[in-house]
Image (tube, rainbow, N blue to C red; front, top):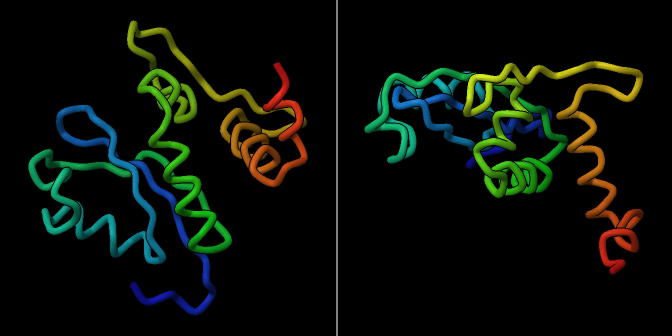
Length: 127
């Protein structure tokens, strides 16, 4: 995959026609979403058309985008719905609250970065 001039990548979440989520990363978001919608994207989305872009996060580089994608994919469906600000399984409204520390998803990724960088690693390994 050729990098764009700025080096900026995107992590994106699509909602498929069957209600499932597809998560990926790209350096050209508009082109990638169009390819998914045309049925020429990932095998997963080809059989689950139509797809709709429901969330995107900007990443500084390819490595960060890949880490965020892997992190999001590791979440349960309920956790994904919470991060996305979408109604949960039982219809309860889960919305992102913004406060002086940012939205829930911003705090989530910020904490995850600190864990990865080691500043919170000692907390994560305590018993």
